[in-house]
Image 1 (cartoon, rainbow, N blue to C red):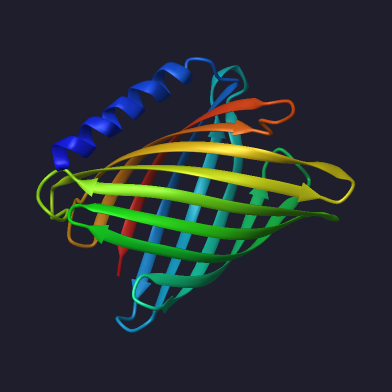
Image 2 (cartoon, rainbow, N blue to C red):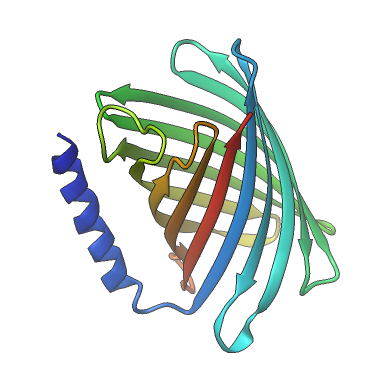
Length: 219
C-alpha cells in the first residue's frame, strides 16, 4: 500500500514541477513551530516565520508570530482559535489575524487523511478582510505503519480560499502543496515543502511558487 500511494505522490509532484515552470514570483519561507499536548483534550501550537522574495527583487517581506489553541471534540475532531501578528517590512502597516477552525483527521493503516476548515479575519490598518478556507491533506510514512526516528514521510494537500473585503470584488485562491519530511528525533522533525499558489485565479491571476523549510518541535 505504501508503494501505491508513493507512486501517486510522485506523479503529482512531477505534474506540479511542470506547471511551476511558469511562475510570477518565487518566495522562500522558513518557520519554527513548537507544539504542546497536555495528554487530555487541549493542545497548543506557537510558531515564528519569515518570508523572503527571491530573484531580482530579493528581500525580506515579513516576519510573523502566531499561536493556536485547540480542543479535542469527539474521537477525531478539534476546534481551535488562533492569533497571528505580521510585521510587513515593505509597508508602513502591520497585520493582525484572528482565526477560528475545525479540523478532522484519521489514519487508515499508513495513510493519514485530514480536513480543515478555517475562517480568518485579517486586519491591516482600517481594512478588514474575511477569508474562508478548506484544506484536504494526506500524509504517509515511507517505512512501516508510522514514522519513527530517522525515518522519512511524504505529504500533500490542496487548499481553496474564498476572500471578501468591503468595497472589493470577492475572489478565490488555490494552493497545492507537497511535503517531504524527516523525523530527526522523537520530538523534532524537519520538513521541506513546495507550494504552488494561484492567487485571485478568477480575476487577474498571480502564480507564486513557495519553498518552505519548517522545524517542528513537540514538547
